Image (tube, rainbow, N blue to C red; front, top):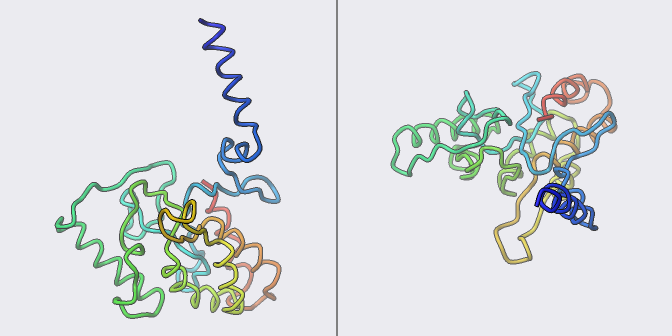
Length: 209
């Protein structure tokens, strides 16, 4: 039994994970970078802007475990609030989040989608709705100096369709999107545009879980 359960079974499971299409998920779906992995497509990392007044990043959903009402979340902690729809503290947090997101994006509170103000069950959800991504696109384009059309293309490249074509809704992977944004902005934006490349260099390291 020791040989069977302690050697044969683990080796069999490891062999299965080497099959085509399974190796990357088995290793954590890591995103490669120039100096090593920069994150995982399974974990949403809400980056912190070096200058909040010139925020160049797309943001994930808020986390119930975050110290601040909007985050960023601590990727070492996972969990929701378990608060119901009539919980006064939850309703107050949703209202405050809507006001803060609206101010950050320069829109009316009514334009803020639901996933921008409600936390996911895990608090580490890497996905947002296409509507929330579209809301953030003008700000990201303005701060980075990239053309809005190019930023929209990056959003489209990070958008995933329904699972098996029928389950769930289309969603945008923020971790993939910010990684592509960092690579594009650092190569395509001349120094001084949108606040300068230095605005974007420092926060990249904060994307790593």
